[in-house]
Length: 475
Ligand code: 5AD
Ligand code: SF4
Image (tube, rainbow, N blue to C red; front, top):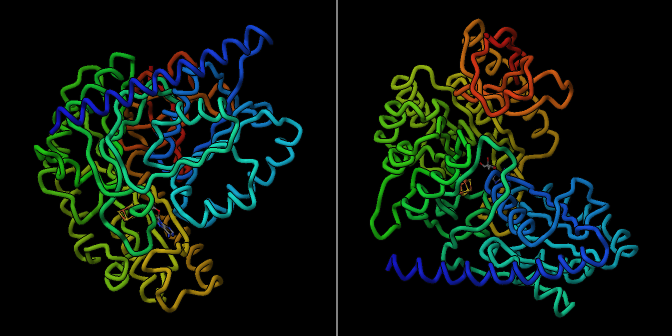
C-alpha cells in the first residue's frame, strides 16, 4: 500500500531527525568548550548517483553541526562514498586509507567513515576488518539514511560499527542535502538496476530497480525551484524503465511531462538511458517539451553486435544506429553522449573497429571511455580470452583519437552561433572567465562577472577547443 509505505518512511525520517539532534547537541557542547566547530571532509567517487548521495550525507552532517572543509588533514570526520565499478576506484580507497593511518595515530578522535557501493562486497569488508582497523563506521548503499543513527551510536559506545544491508528497505524521503551548485540540482527518480550487463557490478551492490512516487519527485523539484534552482538532472541507472514497478505504473515520458509543469525550472536533463528501453513516446515527449534539453546520454559500450550480446545489452549495432537516426530525425539539434568500454573479454580487432565505426556514425559530442575492469562475481569475470593489457591500451588510445576528431566536428556546427548559456562557475584558472553550458551541454568559457552565475545569458560561440568552446557574451 502506497500510504503505509509513506508512513514507514516518515517514521524512519523522524527517527533520524532525532539522532541528528543528539549529535548536534554533542557538537554544540564541543563548540561551547573549545570555540571551534567540528569539521568534516567528504569525498564522493564514481557516478552522479554517488555524488548526489554525498550531497545528502553532507546535508545531514551540516544539520548535525559539522562544518565542511576541503582540507582532509584538518577534519574531525572523514567520509568516503566509494565506487566499485572498476578496480582502480577500489585501489584508490585502500591507498587513501593507508595514508590515513598516520593521521589517525596523531588525531585519535578523528572518525573515518566509509559507505557506498564498494562496502556491499563481503571481500572488501573482510579486508577492512583485518587490515584497516582504524576505520570507525562502515555502511552500504541501502541504509545511507541511517548515517545519523550510526554516528550517534559510534559516539556513544566508542566501538567500530559495520552496518551493511543485503537488500533495500523503504525509500526514505526528505533527507537534508547540500547542493554543490545553487542553480542546478540532481533528483533521484529511481534506485537500483535490473539489467545485469555481464561486466557490471552495480545490480549486485545497488539492488533491484525501485522508483520513487511521481508526486514525491515533483514535490522535490518544486522545492528546488522555489529555492532558485533552474536546471535539474533526473537520476537513475536506467531512467527508461522508471515507474514500471510502481503500484500505479507510469512511464518516464509521463514523469517528464509532470516535472515540466514545475514553474521556475528552465532546463531538465536526465541520465542514464538504456538503448534497449528508449521508447518512441520518450522521443516524442523530449522533442515536444521545450524545457527538456536536447541532449541525450545513450551508453553504447561497444559497436560489435556479438560483444553486445555477450555483454547482455539486448541490442545490436544496427538497432543502436537505427535508434540514433530516429532520435536525430525527431530532434535535429540534439547532441549525444555515451559510455564506451574497450577490452571486454574476447574483443577482437574487428570488434573494436565496429566500435570506432559507431563512434563516427553516431557522432558523439562527449564520451566517457573505460578500460574493461574484471569484477569478481560478474559473469564476464570468468569469460575466456581476457584481452592482454598492451592490446587494450593501444585500442584505448586509438579510440580517444577517433573521438577527439568526431567531438571536434560535432562542436563545429555551433561555432558562430549565439546561444543561451547558463553560467555555472568562475574558471579555476582565470577569475575573469566564467564557465557555463548550452542546452546541448557544450561547455563554454567566456569573459564575465561572477554576478552572472546562475543566469542564462546569450553567448556567441567563437573558438572550438574540442572539449570546450571559447565564447563572447552578447550584451
Ligand atoms: N569495467 C569497465 N567499465 C565498466 N562500466 C561498468 N562496469 C564496468 C567494468 N567492469 C562502465 C560502463 C557503464 C559506466 C557507468 O561504467 O560503461 O556505462
Ligand atoms: Fe550496470 Fe548495465 Fe545496470 Fe548500467 S544498465 S548499471 S551498465 S548493469
